Image (cartoon, rainbow over all chains, first blue to last red; front, side, top):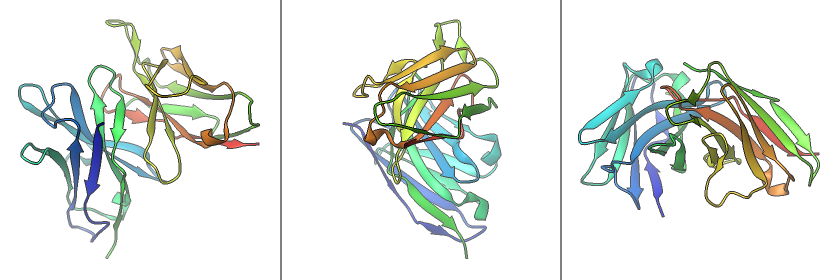
Length: 122
Length: 113
C-alpha cells in the first residue's frame, strides 16, 4: 500500500530555512494521477495547506498566498520523494507539518505522512 | 479563499447514539460540469494525521464503516455517525477543494457522554 515517510529536523532557528522530505513508497512522485502536498497544523491556524507539486507531462507547483514568497516544493524523481523548503521562518511557523497525497479527480488527501513537529526557536 | 465553518465546535454523545456535525462553506463547492460537491471529511485522533473518511460529500473511502455518512450540497453539508462507538472519539474536519487553495474547517471534537 502507499506510504509516506517524513524526515527532517524538529527545531529550526528564526530566520533560517525549514526543510522537510517526504519519501513515497507504493506510488511514484511522477504519477499522472496524484499531487504531492504539504499541509501544516497549529492551534492558532488549524489545518493549513501550503503547497504542492505534480506531474502532468511537465512539472507544476502551486503555493498558498500566505507563504508564496518563502516556499519551494520540489520533486526528487531519483529518490521518489518530494521536499518542502520554507525560508525566513519565525515562531508563527511552529506547527506539525504533514505531507499528503492528493487524488486527482476527487481532490481529497487520501494518504498522509506521520507528521513532523517543527518548532521555530533560538 | 473559501471559508469553511463547522458547528458545533464540540459535542458529547452517548454510545450508540447519533452524532451530527455541520459544515458550511462561504460559497458553493458544487461543480455542475460533473455534478460533484468538492467536500471532504476527515477524522483525526490524537497524535495521528487526519484520515480520509468521505469525499465528494457522500462517498465513503474504502474501509470506512458504514455508520459514517455524508450529505448535503452547495454550501451546507453534514457528517453523521449513526451509532457512536468508543473508537469514534476524535476531531472531525471538513475540507473543500472546489477552488484553490484547499481550505479546512476549524474542527469538531466528538466525545462520549
